Image (spheres, rainbow, N blue to C red):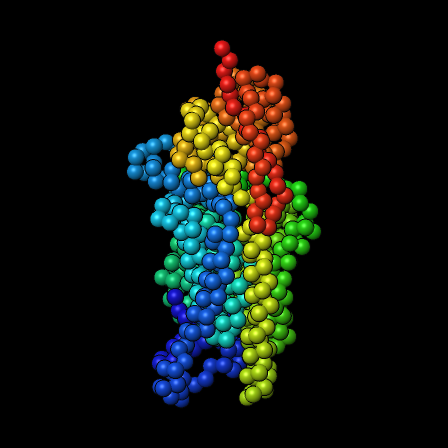
Length: 547
């Protein structure tokens, strides 16, 4: 990636999006030829980026062992191990593509490799590597557009935000997809005023298509990248050269995505429709969604809006102004979408990519504040004050990320008790949320044994008794179908926690208690994580055939 011009090289012309800016970045770009070589050696140009990455690394690493695996982490890592078993040994697979919100053949196998090396810790550190890559991409992009001072403050604000720190210690596909989108954004900015940017746009199209396949949700930001490619080509090279850039990305990405869908087949269509396009609405109010988003992104969004407003006042209608407006507006995409769906599910992860774009405009606002101070000691004091002011987002981000990473029940006690019961049984298992047990227990590789309260796995491995289309993939299963299987003694062990599918759980508990073959053998308290939620309990029934 381009980390901005180095001191040993001649001065590069600013990119076209900032060529008309009123001194954007110029105030802090000292003439390089006049700088003594000894001074250049004393002050490495990349040290501010290294400092930002060091803080981000430390704050994310403290979260790596904060709690046991979250259900999504366990699900994707478990799926990755099964994908490798399928490739190496030809073992059958569940229909992951029909209900995963990302292609199961991309992140899960990569995460499983890390898990094989160092367990959940290594898988979470892999996510940290992706998020560090996103910070480097932000530094390079902002530096290319507005200079190093903007790059520093943009990268710092993004790196210490709560969602960023959380994703750096969370073993799901989100971090990988965020990195790929940010890589595509840097690729579209890099050509600057060059007329021929075909190679860069092709690379951006490939990165964007891979990001979309990794996690379907982040396709929401494709339009932002396409507009970024267009706006940064004005005023130069402008015209048809500018129009060709987003069209090239769209053509390359479209062909790759279409080819992948044709190769994947109908199950991928089903998965995309039910997890992304026709996602089932939740029960949260739009106000709740927007309020939570604001609590996590408000500092950066306010600064980003200030940067855009400043540019509108000083240079209305110029390419730079439209660019800053686009960057600030990107932070509103996910909150608006999830408010329309009335759900806060995964909101603290999905808002992070919007933070990345908004941080560019926020960094520009800080840069203009410093540039407005008189040159000399006053400007130096202003710059120092802005650096010290970063302590507030650091403390806020550290607090928020800890709450994010410790907000689910600790599963240690549950898996410790369930493990021996599963090992001494060869029958089929019904667990409300089986992903944790499947990931932590050796019997998890025998996936045909495991059913959830959302779907029953048949003896052939096919699904049955799942939720209706109106309920979506996370809806409860059909109570009548479950009652029939319980009556037949299909499950040797049943474990319910009356949390996610509460109404169905009470119906199943009544069916189990009426069946003389099922005996309640354990009532197991579980939770809470270091930050909650309230303690609950798993109730375990065992099938005992009577003579």
